Length: 132
Image (cartoon, rainbow, N blue to C red; front, side):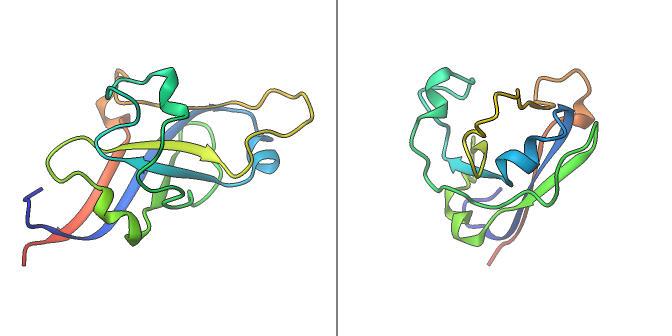
């Protein structure tokens, strides 16, 4: 994206794989935080990423609960557009409204990542912009 681009829309799309059907009803909606260039000290996923500060928190809410092997998407709030790195890495951290639900039932979601063996299933960041 050119350095002088003006972002007009950002959408994050991810594909679900495995889930507990009760996760959304117990933990609430799924949202995301954003960091430029990445959480922690590396673009690789690290334990410290989950507690690292975000540039912008709760940048949007996913449109609906995931189902097996289906796309879900989140429109990024325009207040977070400045957090998009136009020339490099931008990282999102997904989380739920509630951190836990005290019922001792395992809650699990799995999404396909950028190292999945089918490139068409990689997460997608769709950015619409114009050049002034």
